[in-house]
Length: 112
Image 1 (cartoon, rainbow, N blue to C red):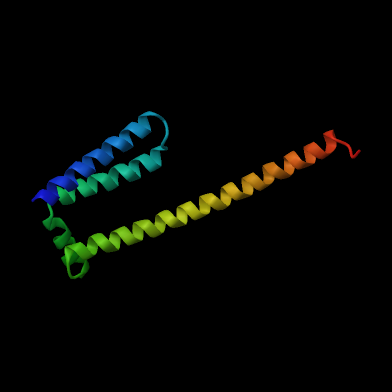
Image 2: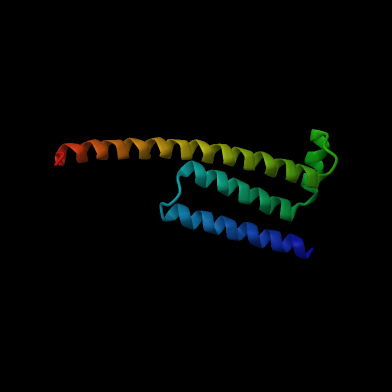
């Protein structure tokens, strides 16, 4: 019972943090909605813990805890993929800016 309350407090705190970041315009709408849905799902699981067992039964998975673990793994893999793509984009953008600055610096400072 204590774990359910703790999980609910963490979920509500997570929702509060996400809402605050969105209001401060530090989070895009899509990211905001994704995180809000995730924390809402955590809250629902804390309030109705049997739901994971029912979902597991529908999916043919042994236990509700396994559903949570599999879902977390999939979400983490998607997050890693998104971060990897974003890092590649930033790397290309930085390279482009550095090249432009180097070319501009070469034109403004003739060889001595």
